[in-house]
Image 1 (cartoon, rainbow, N blue to C red):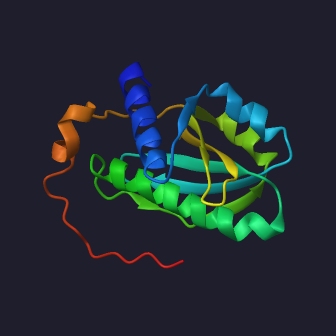
Image 2: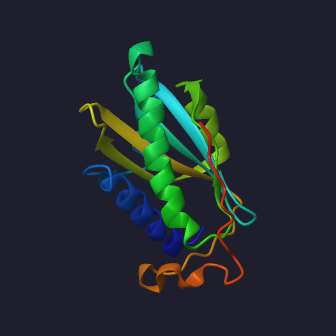
Length: 164
């Protein structure tokens, strides 16, 4: 993937995280390093006809925090979906899935880490968010100044309802 979509996806990830609180962009390698520590991995999938990627959220391990982590991942990924959806028509999002943190190593072998950021949950828990895309993806995103003008003109609101 070229540098421009990388930069734009980093901007979108940071913007979506900033809507929930302050975020700090990190180097992609920090996602792998974090996965080797005891943590909980929550994974969501974003996909459309022209796009497929995974949003992952790493947080403290603990059954008592899992529901909160699901909710946080849903809000953060939903915000990213809304921003990406302005440029990619028909973008959908899965429900959060909990995976063992060791699965992240496998995902990182199969995907390119496009964007990584650190943020805090509503409860003050430090979280690490990442956006992973398949190595062979061909993605063109407009610069930030283009806004939603890039979205398909034929795309209309479908009235979809997401149930959790």
